[in-house]
Image (cartoon, rainbow, N blue to C red; front, side):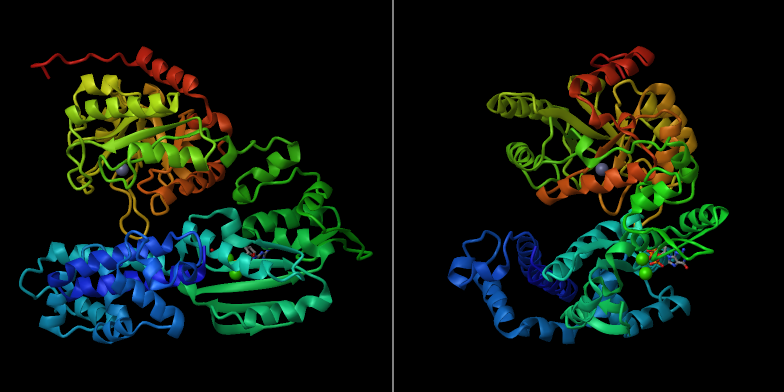
Length: 590
Ligand code: DGT
Ligand code: CA
Ligand code: CA
Ligand code: ZN
């Protein structure tokens, strides 16, 4: 995707937010700009290709006034309306709207009553009690704001893995334009697929004489905000997108594997490898493996070659954490980690029937066109999730029919009828048993009461015969809220005993189960499903993140249910039925 498109999308998003702050009379503008941001972000070609304005308004979601602003941006590099709005409301302040618990009305009150214009002033007013002294700001509300701010700050030091992956794709494609770049890869936490990322570590293989040109290429990139270090084989810069540090290092061909290994880490893994080398009278650094006495080079060209000379099999980056993988690699007993290509279907997604953006028909065709899946499970929300426009029993019945109709046209049972049913406060389900019986797959999830201890609530859901999987089991949202109180070890145990699966939800801010719980679940023999929880076409890509979590949790194909055929998934369901029989409540009972 073009970087201009995404810059424009950011601008439109910010304009929408500023209008939101300025007041309800702007709500149509807010909607128009939000929509335009979304549309521009998802154009397949650079926005320039859609000009002139007359042609552009034919793209649904872009009106003439916004189309004119796109043209203005392409011609002048800025948008006057945007500059004006920015002067009215400081960016820093608007950014506070992203804090959970702080809406436009609250911010406006703070501005009016306390004269707060910047984030700094806001933090100060929180600290010295001025916020709490305002009418309508009870201590609980203030505490919520403080918690929200903390979560946001924690994430600001680091960025989400998904954002980092997208950012690194942009960086890599920028350098790939140079024929002098022989090999290129991201190292560090991105390559290990950590949950959040501090800085970006970029490695390039090139001939010595081409180094200056490559470094110059970086220095001249319009996305570079500041040069921190500029050497002759490395550089560090701050880049504008997401305000990140980018460390670039250059290697010769014979050093490439050693450089990649050294800068992929983690540190503990590297130290352990070095120890193994030292025991043999060798040393290992970012340039290769050498015999200490003679200084003779033993390896360095590829990672495989280095692991091999240390008598180990190649270790996938995701598990280079010194958690026992080195020992297993010495014995040739590393787990065979699940791969993205192993995934045969997506187990959670939403349609326009609840809060998704695609109709059932569109979902089916989109997935068939872009993915090589054998099945998808439609899991719209149940009725108590009002904001998500959840369905009641009758609507699910109608949906089952609608799914059959689409499947009939497709000539196969591609779409499975499922539901994401709310687990109510007492652990009972939001839908009657008889409709659950009619569904192909039942996902149960908590969407309310995040403050109470939810252990028993989840265990009770596991014990329900119709529940096949617990979705996003801890409920955490990165950058917004931690897990609700829950004893996950007990939930994992209940899942194991009842034959219920646990979900690895692959949404970028969820990744829930996280790698630690997924590791625990895998050890306890609990099956997991990986789902994109898609609400829009581009969400299906998130599957990659869920697979990364599973890989970091040492999961093999067999641990992940949706690497299997639907027939095998049916067998998984009937196993639970043998353990936990369902007593269908008759009408009038319950
Ligand atoms: P981050 O950036 O905080 O998300 O995490 P990393 O793991 O990317 O850390 P970073 O950028 O400081 O270092 C990049 C890689 O370089 C890291 O995977 C391990 C390796 N590395 C860094 N410093 C050292 C060191 O002093 N010794 C060794 N053996 N490896 C190091
Ligand atoms: Ca890094
Ligand atoms: Ca770094
Ligand atoms: Zn959900």
